[in-house]
Image (cartoon, rainbow, N blue to C red; front, side, top):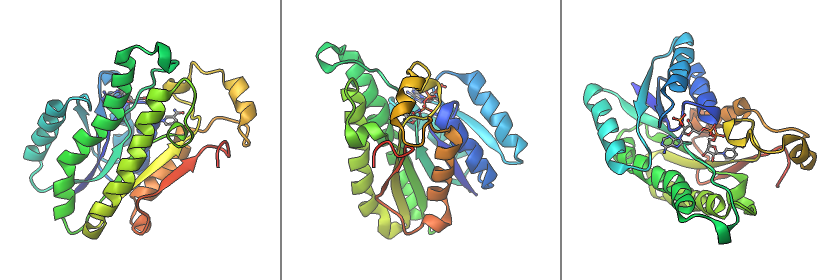
Length: 243
Ligand code: NAP
């Protein structure tokens, strides 16, 4: 049985991706860091689609936690493997670089970039061994393509994730594993709820923030068999904000 793991699956884009994956009939492992109630809610919604779901709590920053949680799951599931990985967990800690607390720099880089490293390196050997290959989707950002003032840490982390996506895609393509990145613009989630939406949407040609379900639909396509020939790509979903 092939499973999907969605990091940061408890809220926002990750939650929508879990539901999309469930609609594709793929059992889901919902990772979260601290918000168990939100993760339980996603689990119930996935199960309501008739698909099995399990919660996997770990902090993507901490390699030992990642390895322990995934190894425990693998021991309990000797005939199954995680064929679909969505590296989605992420945070913002905005501020001008000259005033940025050192911790804000490290936290953003650690979760986005080291989180990618910690989870992906655990799962990749098994993905590459199986003849059905695998799919990896990395949640980058418009910020990683364009660079946004006040987000030097976030832009650096998301741009690094794009570099990693392109390099890894070439390494693992012969084994049937695709690696792509998605670069959303402004999407309505907890992460963007403090932003001045009325002001910002004037700059967006489509005239509104995106919905998590719209990002999840793109993610679902990149995870599907139909996307087997797409790899090393960064796909923007931003209402025409940056092309
Ligand atoms: P969100 O609503 O704030 O949700 C963040 C998710 O990440 C939560 O599930 C949270 O878990 C999890 N998380 C945070 N730190 C974690 C850690 N150390 N280990 C494991 N899980 C962790 O954010 P979102 O808007 O859905 O964003 C999801 C991804 O899309 C992020 O990578 C973000 O950078 C990217 N993105 C978002 C937008 C946007 O406009 N929303 C635009 C571009 C890119 P808990 O519930 O346990 O806290």
